[in-house]
Length: 384
Ligand SMILES: [Zn+2]
Image 1 (cartoon, helix red, strand yellow):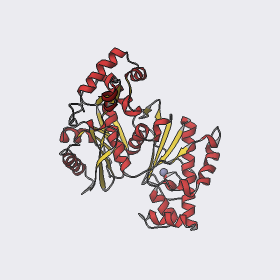
Image 2: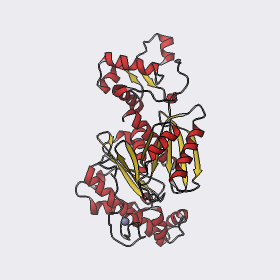
Image 3: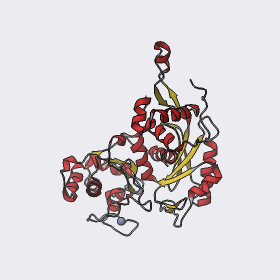
Image 4: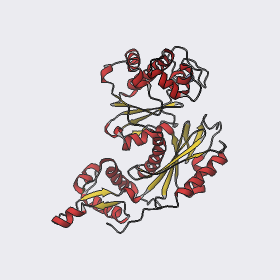
């Protein structure tokens, strides 16, 4: 092993090329110096200098140690050391703070769920600070914090400002990163929750193989994220992927904008519950009834699938993605009513063959949002 057995507690200044080399190892795995230099577009001499720096910092190791000792092979291969640094990722909902700590390979090594005593900004910042301090005590102390939540997160000069989060009842601008940064002493990034999910799926999920990539997050709300040219599309204001209020016809639950015929009226978990005629919060019953063939519940999931198909078609029309990934805890309409999704694609696709639209349903659990926030923090440091 190297002399750097301890994880870092501060992220080092890597410089642009150093960040690129680390990112290449992180996304595509261990590789020879020759291939690494080619892939990143560096001369062998520049790569040697950067590799030395990364080795000294303990972020990478050389070669296959066993192979080298037994056969005298030169240490040509560079490997990332995932355990060299850790990141705190937080997903804020209206009632709970979900936190994970990941290593550099986005593997979750710590996990917490803490109820919010209130939704006030001061309370939330205090709780974030407390959780960060708690998770900084051990051997996996984070070097940066990523926070994600439903709503618009806008860049205002150097600040990341939460513009609107209906789940938290924040109706005015909240400079969350500027509040949490000084309180914790760590770099903080804040993102929309589905953008965070997309960032992680692109770097560490099956999404890494596809370009462009469109990700939908279905749950209490609906959002989407788009990766084009290897970058998460942030837009001019941080507002990309706001596709939830497209009017798709029919009559469903009234959304926060007063529509009863928009994508939100059918696709979100509260809408499926309402349209299926079950009590708010009892999604499990709606799901069970639909799987048992009960007409009203089946109809609610059919209409959800049709609405989802409509916006998937619009994203295909706009971006011609290689893959559409449907994530989130409320994506069951995909297997309950696939024919309705297909019917919407047939109706809304402008061109191309419906069978060319590739839709995947990757494994999902709710901690992926917090993990996505950790990856967003990592992204901010590595690819700034
Ligand atoms: Zn609406």
